[in-house]
Amino acid sequence: MDFSEEDKSKIVNDMCHMIQCKTVSNMDENKIDWSEFEKFTSYLREAFSTIYSTCEFFKIGKTGLVHKISGKAAQASPASTESAQKHAIVLMAHYDVVPVVEADWGFAPFAGDVVDGSIRGRGTMDTKGTLCACMEAVELSLKKGWRPEQDLYLCFSGEEEINGQTCADIVFWFEQNKITVDFVLDEGGAIVENAFPGVSKPCAMVGTEEKGSTYLDLIVGGTTGHASAPPKHSSVGLAAKIVAEIEKKEPAIEFTPTVTQLLRTMGKNNDKAAFRFIFSNLWLTKPLVGLISKILRGELFALLHTTCAITKFTGSEGYNVLPLKASVGMNFRLLGKDTVEKAVRRIEKIASKTARRLAGKNAQVQVKVISYGNPSRVSSINCQQWTMLSEVIKETWPEVIVSPYLMMACSDSRHYCRITDKVYRFSAMYMSKEDRAMIHGINEAIRVDVLLKTVDFYIRLIKKL
Image (tube, rainbow, N blue to C red; front, side, top):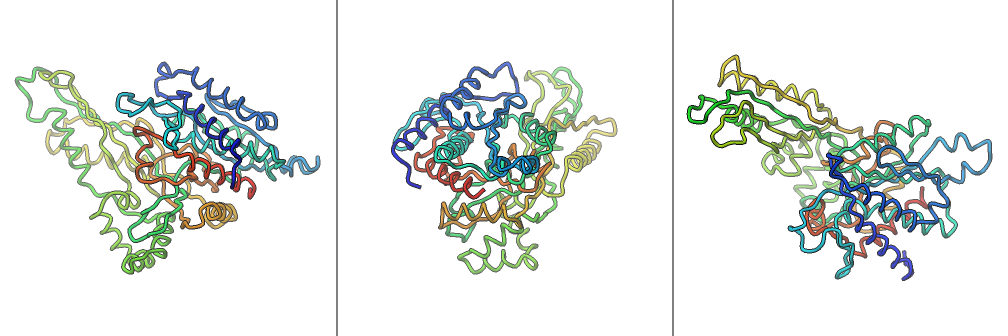
C-alpha cells in the first residue's frame, strides 16, 4: 500500500512515542514504574482518536486494554444483534518490555528516535511494533469509512513478559460474556530467510502450537558446617551428579501435527533432492529424522523433543561454609503429549535413584514446581481462517512460503486456546537473524520500511476479516 507522507510521518512518530514509554514489567511490582504504563495508555488515546471515538473501551485485569469495534452485522438490525455480538475477532499484542542493562547498549534503550532508517529502542520488535501497526491500520481504515463485518477486539496486555494474569483475565471476560472467538492473531513466527536447510525462499512461519514452559527447582539436602571437614557428598556435589544424570537422559521423540506439517512443507519446497525425499516421506523416514535431530541438536532437536535447560544453581553464600541444601533451577519446554506432571515424575525418579545410590537411603531430594504450563492446543489449518490468513500473507509478501510452526517460546495467546482452536501466532514483519537476536537482546530496533509493511499487512487483514 502507498502511504501518504503524512501517514508515514504519523506512524513513525507514534512508534517513537510508544518506545519512549518505559513499560518494563517485573515479577516484583515494587520495581514497576506504573506512571510509564499510564503514559503509554494516555498516548494511545491521544494518537488514535478515531478508534477511541468509535470503540467501546474496557480495562480488564491489572493491565488489559480492550477495544471493541462493533461489526456491521451486529448493527444491521435489532434481530441480528444478539447473535452477531456473540462472535468476535481478536487482534492482540503486549506493551510491556523486558528490563535492559543500559551500559550494554550502544544508544539509550528507550531513545525512540530514528537513525539510518530505523526506529531504535526496547520493544520495537517485541511487541510494540505489531501493536503500533495494528492500531495504525485500524485508525486509517476507520477514517476511510471501513467497518468490520464481525465485532473486532484489539486486546493488549502489559504483563506478558512476566507470565502475568492479565490475558487470562481477558479470556475469562470473553467466557463470562459468552462471546465466541473465531480468530486470534498474536506475536509469533515471522518472515525469515534460511528457515530450513535446502529451502531458498523466505518463509512465513505461523505458530499454530506452543510448547509448554515449566520452571522447576530441584532441592538437595545436605549437612551444614565448616568447609574444612567436608562429607563425601556435599549437597552441591550431589546435586551436580543428579544434573549430569538428567542431561544424559534423552527425552522421547514426538512428531506433533504441527511439526509434521512443517517438515512436509519444508520438504516439498526444498532445493536439495535428499532433503526433499526425507521430509516429504515421513511415513518412511521418521527414524532417520530423529537420528539427524540428535546429531545436529539445536532447533530441529527442540522441534521433536521436550527439552530441559539447567539455568540456576545455588548453594552456600560463603566459600568456607557447607550448604545445608543446594537448589537447581530448570526450565522445561514441554512438547505435544508431555505434561508438567510427567516431567516432575521423571525428575523425581532420576534424582531419588541417583541420590540414594551415592548417599544412601537417607538422601533428601525434593522437586518443587515454581510455575507451570502444559503444551497448547493445536490450532486448525483446515479452516477458512487459516486460508484467509495465508492469502493475506501471500498478498503482502508474494514470494514467501507459508507454513505452520511450533512456537518454542510462550505467548499470551496460549490462554485463548481455552476457548478456540483458531489461534495464530505471527509477527507480521521480515526478521533477519540479526533482527531476531535483538529480541530480549541489546540495541533493539526496527526498520521504518518493515514497520510500514506491517501496517500494510494489518490493513489487508482487517479488510478480509
